[in-house]
Length: 110
Image (cartoon, rainbow, N blue to C red):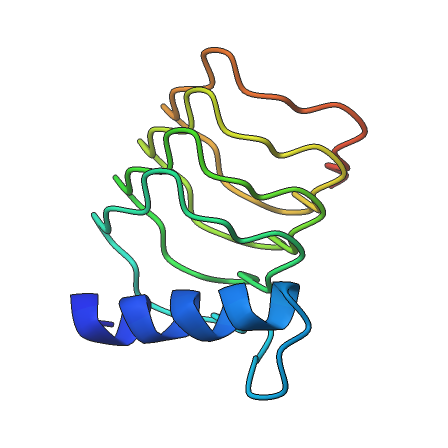
């Protein structure tokens, strides 16, 4: 997924969060976001299941209640991110930077 496509998804999601008529909840299921810069992105309740987020920059991103089932987060930078109530079932967090990450009520089962 290229930078323009990501930007468009984030814009539509922002509108969805604001209850605007043309807003669309972010669905990045299976998306290749390897190395993507999502610093500070608001992905509240977004679907990122099975997405490849290897080496992605998710510092200070809002992933509250996001679906990250099976997501590949190896070596991702999640420092300061909000993953509270996120679904991390089968997510791979090997080498991920979780410094200051909010994981309150996040679910991760095998």
